[in-house]
Amino acid sequence: MITPLIRKLSQAVDFSDDDLATLTRLTSRQRTVGPRTALIHEGDRPGPVRLIMKGLACRYQSLPDGSRQIVALLIPGDFCDLHVAILDRMDHSLGTLSNCDIVEIPRAAVLSLIETSPSITRALWWATLVDEAILRNWLVNKGRRQADLQLLNLFCELLCRYEVAGLAQGDTFPLPLTQEELSDVMGVSVVHANRTLNSLREAGLVTFEKGSVTFPDRARAYEVAEFDPTYLHLTRRR
Amino acid sequence: MITPLIRKLSQAVDFSDDDLATLTRLTSRQRTVGPRTALIHEGDRPGPVRLIMKGLACRYQSLPDGSRQIVALLIPGDFCDLHVAILDRMDHSLGTLSNCDIVEIPRAAVLSLIETSPSITRALWWATLVDEAILRNWLVNKGRRQADLQLLNLFCELLCRYEVAGLAQGDTFPLPLTQEELSDVMGVSVVHANRTLNSLREAGLVTFEKGSVTFPDRARAYEVAEFDPTYLHLTRRR
DNA sequence: CGCAGCGTTGACAACCTTCAAATTTGGTGG
DNA sequence: CCACCAAATTTGAAGGTTGTCAACGCTGCG
Image (cartoon, rainbow over all chains, first blue to last red; front, side, top):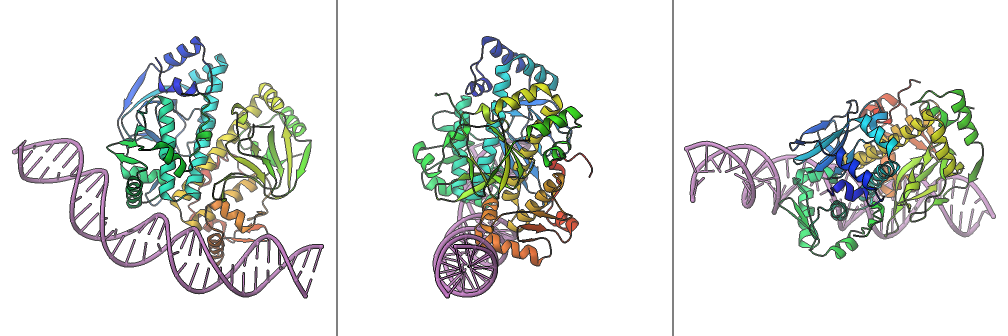
């Protein structure tokens, strides 16, 4: 089966049939987690490696004043904490946003996988580099763009990521978030997130309704958002 | 010789004498680079692994409007692009801020190092995880704190990092930046960076003068900035 | 001296937050 | 189907934070 994971990693690496079988076997035992459920909390010891198969999850950090900042959105095919075993404590939390199907892989299994297959190792490594690049882009977004362009840019990123995962439908992708949660991603107030969404819709750039984001004119959105997907390192054409 | 690099990595790993010798040998051939010099540019192919021995460098991204966002500050003992060989293009730029002494290590040397010494491998891995944690904290800073606390928090982070490197003097550390460059780190205008610095000084929290940052009362600064160094994963006491 | 770069200040405008309230939506039970 | 309720979204108004523009002062250096 071609899973979002395989689609994504195939951007970086040509897998052998063996590799594909290994990846498929690895992801056979899934469990379902409800929305808004904590997976692991800041301060906890790192647990198993998690892989999102379905739904939307996030990394976030809670602040003393009760607010939180989401620092990563995890879509199907994304790994969490692939590497974090080396640290003794989690420095951020991980939780679901929507209903999720998740695979939990014992750390030992990942390590032996790394010894067995160089191409899978390379692919996982690549994936963590892309995650880092995304994080840097979020920082640029927050630091140097105002809320409307920041949000538009974010939506462009997500469209690309969903496309790679094979989960976009044309210029539409699912985003099972409330505006409040979206505002935690953007680092703005809920009220302002709402106004920003409205202004983008009125400008004909994107709409976000009923858990879906749609681009009426993707090329224009890319241009307005100054979105250059290079940083996502999608080498394969689709 | 106990270099900033060794001091830093010793936070995570106990090195054997062999490891220490290897690290020392690796960093023997340095070259000096002037201030405000590009090391590698967005879009370039990844080059050798670079290690900052002296001075201050940064990762940054330039924007169409001519502004830039600095997404990482690199101090002595920090690696650049340890892992980036796997990508075909740089998605950000790297440049010096002050005069720097830099070591350039051929990628092959790093790879063989990784095969030779598990403890060094582990230490390098740990270092990249800390870099990621720092990046996440910058995003939280930018997303959920206003300029004054954001800046204070940043200074706290840098104090800790300079201490680990053995380059802090009490509650003071060097920061060879103009306010303009600092504003590129903070993601605010120069004018606002200036006002923020003044208000922090007037509040008796930090001063930034003549290229040095000084904390009159570090404990209070930590508290006000909501700074919890946990995310820097400094396991060793000092 | 004169210049250039950097730091500082004031005034005003734009962006964003907060608070409060109204409206809509979606789900539940009658 | 409707009433009801909780959650989510939307709107207005006021105030705080930050950006922009412009001017001025300081400092180091040729």
